[in-house]
Amino acid sequence: MRARHIFAVIAGLALPLVIGCELPGRPGPEPEVPRPESVTSFDQLYAENCSGCHGKNGDHGPAANLANPEYQALIDDVSLRDVIVNGEKGTLMPGFGNKAGGQLTDQQIEAIVQGNRSRWKKDNALGGQSPPPYKAAHPADPSKGQAVYAMACARCHGEDAQHRGSAGSILDGSFLALINEQTVRTTIIAGRPDIGEPDWRNHIPGRPMTDDEITNVSAWLIAQRPAAPGQPYPNMQPASEKPGEEQPKTTAGDRPSKASAKP
Ligand code: HEC
Ligand code: HEC
Image (cartoon, rainbow, N blue to C red):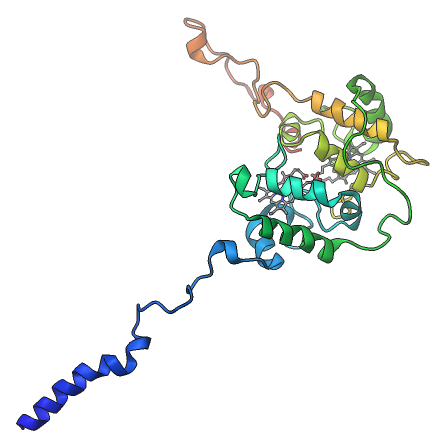
């Protein structure tokens, strides 16, 4: 009886020594979850950081169609890296580089740049034609942009904000608040085959758009951005600024129609 007791105690003490390395909670030599900065697979980086806005496969997202081979042919490595590191000012594109307050290391940014190319760049995407440069080479003259809009955009996007074309209004104030000149430029040149926006060769029937036309219409569009984008009643004063005055009564007529609220 006594000997059995002693044996049980010794066995109990020895057990952790035998299976010690598998005890739950004991850390192994490698971290169980890889450190975020050690991830360099394009698929994982893209899925975690980009797909929500640019689409699971680089298309049909709210933001630029990265899987468009014309886009990959248009943008050079330096510009592509710069957008990912620093973001796109005036849009919702955040900067991902450590120096811009983002979470990704230089090595991870490089993996994303290279992954964009190997996944989506195609030989001869432009059929041997040279597009206008990615960035505007000359200063814009926005005053010349309205005529270009009428010639190159109105047939699909409507002649003005009140007349929406079949492709929806791009003069809607809330839409203009989310884009910048580079976004418009990129969209015109490379097109967005995923949603039906033509490339620079197919806006004006019979001839490609020129670099200056693209520069001027992009600047003119952004110049149409209202001072208070997204405000359905931009002229309404807050009550506190106008003591004693009655607030105008809202009627159904003041409300923007459902159609014009959506870009
Ligand atoms: C919160 C949404 C959001 C996330 C997340 C995001 N982007 Fe963007 N991105 C945008 C918007 C908005 C624009 C500017 C509008 C446009 O080009 O459609 C943009 C623009 C870009 C452009 C430039 C397009 C041009 O005009 O040349 C590139 C390249 C780009 N993003 C790559 C990435 C990559 C790579 C990631 C992931 C590391 C990423 N984005 C994550 C929203 C996002
Ligand atoms: C042949 C018709 C057509 C012409 C011409 C055209 N577009 Fe579009 N555009 C489209 C379609 C279709 C869409 C997608 C609309 C949607 O998603 O509802 C679009 C979308 C856009 C978008 C939004 C892209 C995005 O990322 O959501 C912009 C910006 C744009 N067009 C700019 C222009 C400009 C500037 C011009 C003139 C230089 C122009 N388009 C001429 C058909 C056209």
